Image (tube, one colour):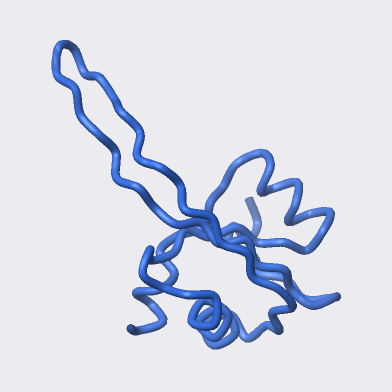
Length: 95
């Protein structure tokens, strides 16, 4: 897999923003087939940072209703990446 296929997007929530500011932790949505070693090497290669730890969570499918039609959102994988002290990844610079 290509490193651009492994990392899909940052997860921007209140909890992930607070973790990024206080604990130097970045939360990313990743390819469900990627393992921890692939995620670690992709983050290090794309952002030029040192990764200390990687934790992964498989997020379940959710049912959604639009009017009378029922549908499902796909399941996805979330990676919580701990960066080395003094390093950071800025997704939204100047916002």
